[in-house]
Image 1 (cartoon, rainbow, N blue to C red):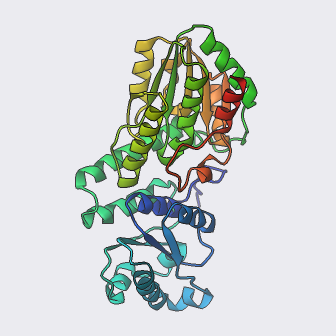
Image 2: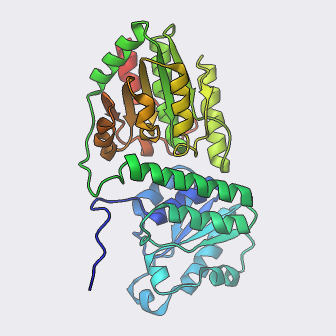
Amino acid sequence: MAVNPMKYMQPRPSSIVAALYTARDLGVDVAILHGPSGCSFKHARLLEEDGMRVLTTSLADHEFIFGGQQPLEAVLRYAEETFSPRRIAVVGTCVSMIIGEDLQSAIRNAGISTPTISVEIHAGFPENIDGVIATLEPAAAEGWISEDELERQKRLLASANEVERLRGAASRPYIEPSRGDLKHLAAERLLALARSGRKGVAIMNAKKETAYMFADELLALHQACPGASITYIANLEERGLPKVREDARRIRDELCEKGLFPVLCGALDEYGANGDTLGEKIRTLSPEFAFIVGVPHAIPPRYLEGVECISVTNGPRQVDPLRDQGHRYVVVEVDLHPRTLGVTHLVESELGAVIRSMA
């Protein structure tokens, strides 16, 4: 019997976790994981720091056989009585899907009045965007988002997936993780370019809340070299799900308060679809160097030919692909995502701190 070859031999994002983050972006106050207590433990804890309570039905081994409808109904009632949430999401797990739990039936039988969606998902999907779509579709059915926004999100997800497949961490079966280049070397070269009078561009193309730290790197360069011939561009237009729009507004306002007024290009959920638009801006500006932070690999390499690139990512598996695409320095901001959860102001980056120390 033929066996399908393994696509990836490295850990990939979970569709269950993607569903949880999407629920948060939709303004869900309480998410209930219907499964074992340890399922998605790390991300559940992180999301609680971001203001969304994550409960679990804590299914035990005997409930794997006899079902867990009653525990789910009990947790739903507890969530409503204890937290008075505006919205609830019940998120499936591998266990609940395998034993065939009826999440929607449990929501009806619980007798709660809080607007609640059921997310039929498990970790067996090859792409984490399945978890996002599985959350957005019932949200659209409940009127939490429009059908147009649902279709927009699907297009953006497909674009982000294609970027990862072509030039990102999903471009090879296995990529060795790397901490990237030393930050002081990258900062030294960046400052030398900026102070030389050469024409440059500094671009933030960041994914959602990670922009709270990536924006700091553009700000640090601006503060260190205020008179440099650099055009600043950031994907801070206000579109998307509620939290995404609010994050863009906050970051843009704080940058403006500190004297940096970037050209706006794209929204925080458009990082995967923004590559050609940013590439055309680069082509028009004809810079000698580019400083690109967030998701640098979204920009096709053809737009960066002859441009010296210094890029920043938060993915250790993104270093080698970026080097292969010709980026001279690739810096990794370690633990960026946990540090940008639950924040409402810019977070100083390690590279930003190094740039300021050298200035």
